[in-house]
Length: 466
Ligand code: 6PG
Image (cartoon, rainbow, N blue to C red; front, side, top):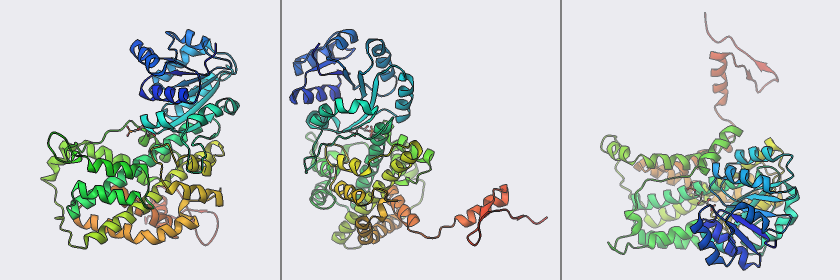
């Protein structure tokens, strides 16, 4: 037995990770229930693809390391059930799928006493990332880290300063939680970019080709990021058959696999304000009821979009609005991690997390280096917005976000993520909110009591007149 690592699940992600491992000099064994996948894996990678889990486990050097790349949910439980009797204390199982963190918590509890070291690792970067270097967020049994560290860091992407985009996140399900937050931010990033596109299209009548240039330009500045770059590429693509911009031919109905929804649910569960992430999920759900929208578009009143301002100036305002909204969405994501950190006592390394998102993952962006620095300045930052650098960015960009949201409202263009980012910013910077009245309402109808600003204690008023 001499293989360094086993890959269970030989879909594109699993196969590409195996190729990556192979390139880094690791001896890989692979397994999939599907014989064709095993064969294609053996052919493409030159690695062994045993026909059963028994043979797979027997081919591994001990303590064994197994990386599961199977679809999240029941398949992970099935593989674990199959592996459990074959593994010994000290063996390491890494779940590299987009697993819901609560499932990882449950599996850790189920494996207690087995001596198997369980790691839930978020892996981001899609198929290309798996092959060329993803960002990896492993968390779980810390005893596993010294053994898997050289393997995972070797295949991970590297940031500009050479630091691998893989580091230990923390105990229990923290790795999968952090990946879930990554995806929540990914949803918000994607939606705000879509809204920027929508505004330029609806208010300025810009064509995809022109917008491709705008996004390419933005990608060279402070908005530099993978998602802005691919947006420029997408907008430039022409459909070969029709000669029209391909983006114009794609149905405007978004799908989702659930990670953004989980992030929003976790925010509600933990009492965290993450409206821009949630609105990015709702933007997908409302897009999905296309038939209803088409019908409603002939029934419901709205203003005529008739923008008359300076187009070049407006494009620059949209750029600044996008930056401001992006900072607000990241702030919400980091608040979500901070709340989980409090709840579960994980001691999450926020600066390290921002650092390992700088390359390899879908949300990789220049901004993440600034976030890394913000947490290096103050590891206990109450909110990214109040960091000196980001407070300045917002000071520079909030007016554009207002102007863009106002223009969208005036002309009836739906930009839910921009709007909620602005509301988040304004709520967070308000020393006073109307919750005094809300507390009075609660006390009025439910005797829920309220606190006062001028003295300590809980109070109840008999509001109703008999
Ligand atoms: C990543 C991506 C990846 C996947 C999303 C897509 O980090 O590499 O987030 O995990 O593409 O799960 O999610 P939706 O299908 O929900 O858009």
